[in-house]
Length: 298
Image (cartoon, rainbow, N blue to C red; front, side, top):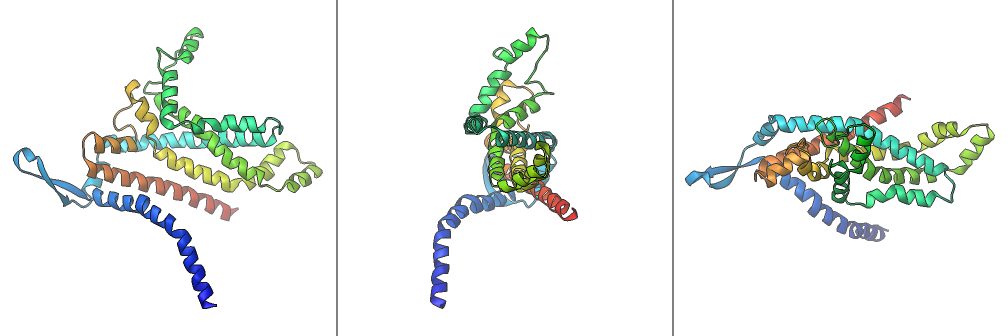
């Protein structure tokens, strides 16, 4: 019996070892290296301070990052972005999923593919495509607005954040929708038949059966959306050349990128990346704790 148990344990270890090895190499090691870089600095010496050697600086990089008004403003910007875009994304994805679930079987595959298709477009390409639609000299949307007497400025300081939100929603709503559709398809159809016999209408089936039973999928997609929102990078990076409103520190990720690859300050960039990771983790776990506490109170 002991030998069989030992053999099973080694079998489990054998199956898990490739995953654990890859996770260690490509997740744990980079995280540890970023933490190491964030507490290190460069000690300048020699003529004009060109020669330098690494030295331990403790929390100085974190203090410098949090003391930078541009970096802290970028956090406020993505928090505002998340406050609007996350609910919008989840509501839109949920509506699409419910429409597909209620649609005729003849058209479900077509619309499901059409809604999911933007997710297959790389973020860089999607941002470039929408960038053309946002550029005054090229955009047919702006031309139509001018004909109607409406002045559209997608790249201005007051609208660029929401122009980015439009790109993100267009690209990822289909993915979240697919997760919700999969959860909807797992609901026992007997529940709907019983509800129909009891006289429940379509709205009651949605609010009393479908939405409560897809709650785990809604929570999962919300957490993914929160994490993706905090890590906003590709869209402002691509739109930066055509929008003067997007600075080098427009989002925390963009600020860290420019510190590393423009100013060659990898230590400060590592500290900013760690702060960003802590913020994303805190918001995600905070949301999960809020949802769990609400479930217990019900």
